[in-house]
Image (cartoon, rainbow, N blue to C red):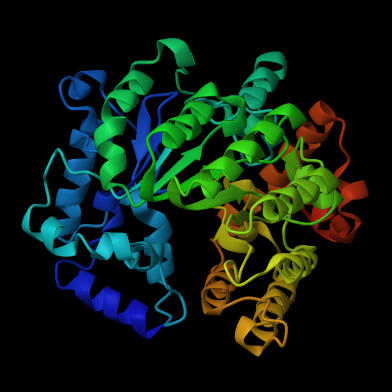
Amino acid sequence: MSNYSDVKKKLDTVSSCFCLAKWTTVTLHLESGTNHSCHHPKVHDTPVEELVGNPAALHNTKFKIQQRKGMIEGNRPEECGYCWNVEDLKSESAISDRIIKSSAPYSMADYEKIKLNPYDNKLVPRYVEASFSNTCQFKCSYCSANFSSSWAEELEKHGQYHNRHGENYMKIYKEDENPYIKAFWEWWPDLKRDLDTFRITGGEPLLSPNTFKVLESLLVNPEPNLSLNINSNLGAPEVLVNKFINLIGQLSATKSVRELIIYTSIDAFGARAEYIRHGLKHDQFWNNVDRLLSADERTQVIIMCTFNALSITTYVELLQKICEVNEKHKNANRPVPLEIDIAYLRHPFHQTVNILTDDYIPQMESIVKFIEANQMHQSPKGVGFHNLHTIKATRILEWMKKGDSPASKRRNQADFYKFFTEHDRRRNKNFLETFPEMDKFWNYCKQMAETV
């Protein structure tokens, strides 16, 4: 907490809106020619003409430079509302991602450079996420056609859901004729030398040939100072999972990169997790986690949990499973084999924790208490959680308590019922069979749908 306080003071000497992530990090959605500074702001277009002679414009778009200018001048970019929501809670325990992301060593290392030259249009980021394709075999309930080809196919067959009319679906380029992927490979030889972290995302990255091209290129031309991160839902065909595990093992054995981290996602436990992330096979998921951690003693797996309204009833079970996996796989080189990052869902509104009725607050309090009671430093087996987990779970609790306006909450509860009723029809699911413990809430949302 004291470190985050020091970081905040340092940032605030520039501006109370200053966030280093706007300079040092970027997610490149190459399949659609869009990008954003981190996963909270909505994506914006990367004009092709800005890339001519300057592939670094994949990150340093004119739009983003204007957002940086606003931050320097003390104006809150609207796209960064996730952090402003947290900071407006006025709670010492509610640390925004503006502070957390800026505190990363690779970001703070560039603090003075950015302060002196904040509008450099050739700035090399330190943390880059890149997706090459939206091809994905999953249809997670909170996802969209922009990030899942399976979602796109469903919408083409059945049409849009009632509360998503007018949603802006982006043009998706084919991988072999994509000008943004071409610009990426032009930039890659220079980019990778200055990177702290390169992370491949999607879609499902194991379904893209460019993912394997990156892995194979690093075997030929190693970058021993690079942290290589790959997202995967771990549900790809076995032949691709096997190829992936083999390449990861080779990169580790040859020390071609500094470290290997595999990011995956699960938001609840058992059948409830499968319901949220349609296409997930729960047992297969945990088996592949076990295979990755068994194949190489250095590789770490991190679960990106998108905490949503359907996470809350089995979340403690998920946390217990993580402790079990860590107890099995921890070693001197890897004290925390399986980590979890707890971020709360903001969109779509009808699936956020803010739609839950007040009787769910004690359940969220129990999750926070479980994390606090299972701190790693208190565990005789050295497995458990740490202070940042408490911070992130607590800010979800505080956001729930703050709530939304009554009218907005009723509207989102009505949309929850309408969405999942149609969701179940399209996907042959049954909400109440999967979440019998939420029957009272379901019926309440049904009532809202009939009256709002």
